[in-house]
Length: 162
Image (cartoon, rainbow, N blue to C red):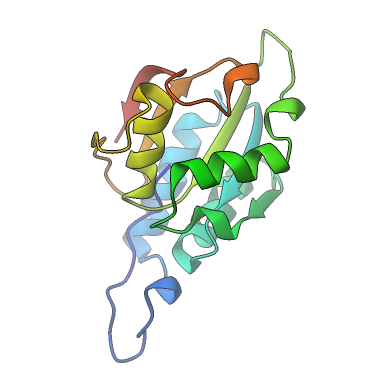
């Protein structure tokens, strides 16, 4: 998931990492979370440390019944997908995925472009040069076997919510 619409840099906000969600950004995140809530039953939420991503995670977590989320430095905008997969391996993310067939597990990553695009390209095609555009508060849904979560080119494209 890409964070919601954020404020522009200004005299008051000089660092990209401190840009907050706009009112519109909060509304679009809340609406997307409400739309996705029936599908996110067993969801693990991870987000970038940037303010707008944390605020997006807070809104999503509230809609999902105040589900906990983890803030991870490795989800910053310019990170390499291979580093991210390595970090998830260290956290044993794929090993914690429930096997409930009625409620399959979801890994919700809330971050930024171009990282969201590059992660999708890595998981689907093992190629980070392919571009998967996404609007603010948009979601790319991929399907992948938990045992293959940390391998490139193993995901199947499902759909995009914009």
